[in-house]
Image (tube, rainbow, N blue to C red; front, side, top):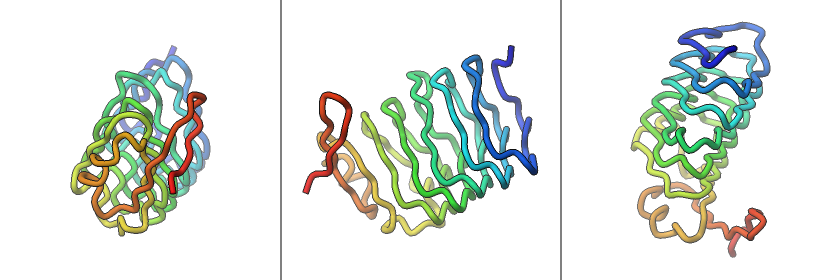
Length: 171
């Protein structure tokens, strides 16, 4: 039974295109998949409790990421997706509360960030090397004042959520 993916376990794997985590994997260690240039998709199961530093850095074929919904996974770590130059969309689940430095550095194709649930703080260098004015951040309308203060410079769009979890843009 595999409970974790070790440091550099798949680092620079030349032909790895898809990762589907087993429901037994609780953690992904530092640099586990860094430099996997052909990696296009990652399916995190909600059993994942921690993802190490720069675990997916330099995975330049990734275009979209949905991070795991697990109450123990609360921080997007340092350099996690640094240099993922084709990453366009990020979905941050409810329990994420902080984005550390260089997490999305040089992700120059980034267009959309969906911040579900709680307010999310980010290090001032989390988005280094990116024109943040080109990134649209969607967030729950009840946190509007927080996002206006802490996400200054991003294109901010408040959303209203229905009881079914469907969200609506407010005009």
